[in-house]
Length: 388
Length: 251
Image (cartoon, rainbow over all chains, first blue to last red):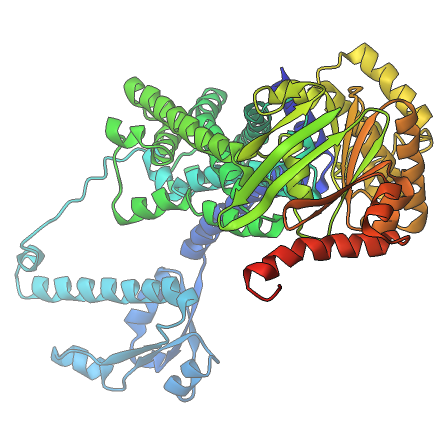
């Protein structure tokens, strides 16, 4: 009953704090999805445009290789005449790259010698890597075509120079391909959950002590356990609120990402969204307990902020491990808190089914750990040093 | 009524309170006087159940605070030296929160807060957020909050430290009013004049021990000085004397 009174007061109090509201309702939950949608949308659209757009290619000595020029033009490379010092021009970024056809090109080709031509490009320029690759691929294609023609002219089947034929079969579905991009999503979501309770955890513990309101509060008839429980639940509530908002925001944001154009799919229908919420919600309680415990040990608002920033790294851990050594949704992986939520989210987003036992264990172990952390916090609250 | 006997408390190597006994009667103001670090706050915190004494007994209205802390807390109002209000809540909400935690039901709580607001002249600001309160307003709110559950005993830890003259005056008047109502008031201070102006009974502590006690006049007589500040200084000097004797410097 008194837990409920503390809970209501903390919710009411913090709903009036603009900083809390901004972090719970805006920055945390909306920033991630919007950033994600804009970033992904732009990346995909730009990638598509890049591949289809005609590319200007400065060429020096184009007159020595009319067939090659015709082939390049066929492949949407627009030839521009270039005159000057190619190396200098590329280095000083007057042009992005230059193809130089040697005077000897035509003669060498007729004689059956390797025909000399040079491609000047600055490979340290990341932005151009796609375009450079495109030019190189086109020239290589012309090279292969000439090879086959020469072999054919000598009565040899072009296949002799291709002893192997490797065929790659991609069995991924559009959903699983979308996942490669979505690997960031669980991190965003877990971080948002922590952000949601961040200011509450500080305000209700270190903040209370700094204001000098903790001592009078502890001198009321409320037991320390009741007070702590109310604060914990309020923190978890704000985390859950942030979780609901971030999932809703992602389900909207994902509609604006043209995944299907790159043959990927990533969508969050209502059922998946609800499953996501239920799967991640135990983490909100664990996060609240950990943050309240850490903030309890600190003396001031500032100190608490510093220490809680360290806690914010926790959701990053599974993502880093995932990049180094991707894990499968085994029951064991699911049973580990934080990691389990990460894996489960990835699977849900990939429209895969999860082992029920794994989910049950995930929830059970996370809540059990929450209990242990809350118990430690309670032990601390019973100590005299809690007054600071 | 608050009775403490032989209180002791140590924090690690520091012996904060070595031997403090005191008795604060209903309808009287008892001042706990001592220099900074003498053990005033620690003694009050033991009485208010915030910390546990290592030895000694405390009874508040006959309730043993170590055995029945919750029950004892209901018999006491505690006001810390900074008001300790929640700035985003209004004065009324601050008071209501503590009233609810102390088990007062909604209906009687509203009436009680109305009564306190009237009594302490808080009507003009009680519904504004506490953030913008003046020192005097904060003080009144904190006082109302600490007595909302109608306790018989009131404990104030350095209530006037950091207050301006007007707020200090207002607080003194409030404390005297509460004495009229029969409250047992125990407050700590390191300012002699304040204690002299207000208290019926003075307990002087230094180095965690009671060095003198009595009514202001009794103390003046015992120490052979008319000036209470002189009394204070002599009492503390007396407490330090045995320590120097240990060092073999005094005959």
